[in-house]
Amino acid sequence: MTDIAHSYVVASSKNAPSLGRLCGYAAGHPQDAFHLPARRTSVPEARKRVIALLREWGAAQHVRDDVELVVSELFTNAVRHTDSEKVGCELALVGSHIRIEITDEGGPGHSAPHAQPGSVDKEGGRGLFLVGALSESWGTRPGDSGRGRVVWADLPYAAASL
Image (cartoon, rainbow, N blue to C red; front, side):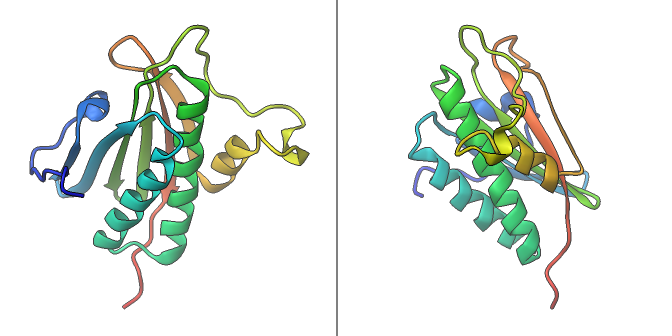
């Protein structure tokens, strides 16, 4: 990971897609953002970065597992269902929650993600059911640039036991 630059300036989620990596603290709350090319091969890299970050933050194993799964599902959706060149990921620890934001660049006919009826028993389409089951809340909003979308999820946070 020689392309990673550390900084103590924290960017808002609207800047996440344009960042190589940003790490810092906003009002005592850890926060990190990075972007990767919108390719299938970037999904494992996103998972790896998120797990390393959560270890630095001292997250419990079950929190790392849940956040890894949610990031994987949302990042995969951004790669598969948009015409993005890059996908942004931002995590922030605020109180007893971790906020995950995945930002894409959209594309023609880009609509808000939604769980497909009857998709629980199908090979694909279960990702958003998993996101909903693991998150205390989740949703979408238009990208701050006017293009694309931000999909966010709030998950409960717990520190690892010493």
